[in-house]
Amino acid sequence: MAILGKLDSANLNGGQKLAVKYFTVALVLFGAQILFGLLAGIQYLKPDFLFGILDFSVNRMVHINALVVWLLFGFIGSVYWMLEDESGIPVVGLGLGNLIFWIFTLAVAAVVVVYLLIQVGPGEHSTIWLVNEGREYIEAPRWADIGIVVCVLAFFYNVAATFAKGRYTGVGGVLVLDLIALFGLYLAGMFYTPNVSVDQYWWWWVIHLWVEATWEVLVGCLMAYGLMLTLGVRRKIVETWLYVEVALMFGSGILGLGHHYFWIGTPEYWFTIGGFFSALEPIPLVAMVVHSVFDAGAHKMKNTNHPALAWIIAHAFGNFFGAGVWGFMHTLPQINLYTHGTQWTASHGHLAFFGAYATLVIAFFYIALQKWRGNVWMSGGIAGAWRWKWAMILLNLGMVGMVMAMLISGYEQSQIERAIEGSTWMGYFTAQAHPWFVQGMWWRQVFGWMFAAGFVLLAWDLLTIGGREKRPALQHAELATA
Ligand code: HEM
Ligand code: HEM
Ligand SMILES: [Fe+2]
Image (cartoon, rainbow, N blue to C red; front, side, top):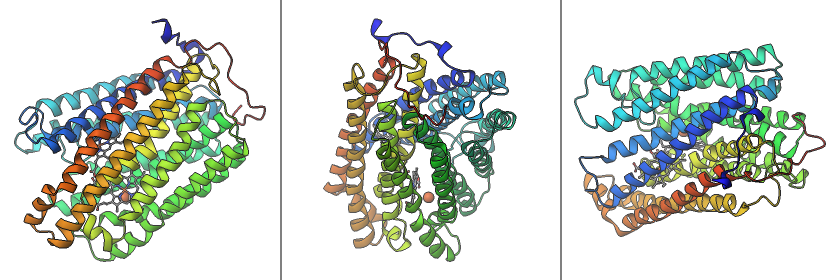
């Protein structure tokens, strides 16, 4: 046990003590996400596996709901982490924040237990309230929806009141405005309409306007803070970049929503709007890469936290490739006609969620651990550095491998099911049975195990890193956040 070393909460401010609770739950849910992804992946290869016990529909649902929730926990934790640094005062309403943390966590646990216990049943009105709302990614039943709204309102109060009482930095201002939009949009996914087109129309407001607008702005704020902290970049520089990125992001991402309106029964003008604006979406992501690489170069890579900076850079590239390049590939309606809903989509979904969001939350895990250990040295020559490096290699290689495997399967589906067979029912099965599809699904599983191994190593590293470190953290003379 000695290797674990000592974690001392006395090193943390109030907001940060709460943040590490959120981070702990986030890490556990990340593990659960991977487990259920592996089960769902096995069922692609062996459809009988756990059939009637733990169905594919349930595994898939737990996999992607856990994803959304662990990222939300990671984001909330990251905001609490930086809140006192940014605002210059202790968090307002911290007691409420702590209470809400427990309510939120218990509610998530209850929802998952119900998912697992009630896997099939009639779709009645009570089902929406008690079991499952049936909207992909945010399937939580209505009681939990309302609970989530209450929890995030309390969180929003903590953040806004703290900045209002302390000081409003540029990062703080963007963050508060963004959180209003982010949580406001959740409401769009709560109202039931019996018309599937109308239902999807509003549901996309949550999913798309989260990941391609409000979440992007949120991670922009987190990245700004992370760059100031690890590299000591001047505030003026990161905030200027942030404003540019936010303007470009909203300018393209909001109407880019149209790329989900191609085939759900909405008017035809969405082809033009969706195609045009979503094609512009990679631009802010390029800006984010340039921003982080430029800053790192300008500081000659000298930084206070190697693993955190490495993950921040992974985030900049992951966001650009996963969202920007992989998104752009299928965003024009002429192409999407063939690729829609194939493994091509899943390939993009994986690389984008991992590259843009998982990476940055992991960077914050490392930022938190450094201070939790007493603000110890985490620059070159960390004891046991092989662990964070190998975790990073396995997670990234595992993800890229899965993404390429799915892309090949998706290509095959687009070609055989759509182009050759003309999207017929028969064409669907012909494509599913084709060796290229099946092999892609096998490789997805193989790389999935690699990814899982990377996660185990990451968890081990997070438990041990800095445990025996005595040297104080490197100081930037010009550390802008000081
Ligand atoms: C980090 C940001 C992003 C994330 C996390 C993300 C994630 C996803 C996910 C999970 C889906 C599948 C949704 C479903 O279940 O049907 C999807 C679909 C899609 N995404 Fe993204 N995405 C991001 C950014 C982008 C960008 C920037 C573009 C365009 C340049 C884009 C274009 C598309 C398109 C066209 C679809 C529809 C695919 C289909 O028709 O099946 N995405 N995205
Ligand atoms: C061990 C690793 C993983 C495996 C084996 C795995 C497997 C799967 C499977 C089988 C599905 C269902 C696909 C379908 O319905 O056709 C899925 C969906 C999804 N997974 Fe994973 N997954 C893994 C890790 C991850 C990670 C790390 C992320 C994000 C950070 C992620 C994000 C998603 C998303 C967004 C979807 C929905 C995609 C869509 O609707 O197009 N997965 N995954
Ligand atoms: Fe989208």
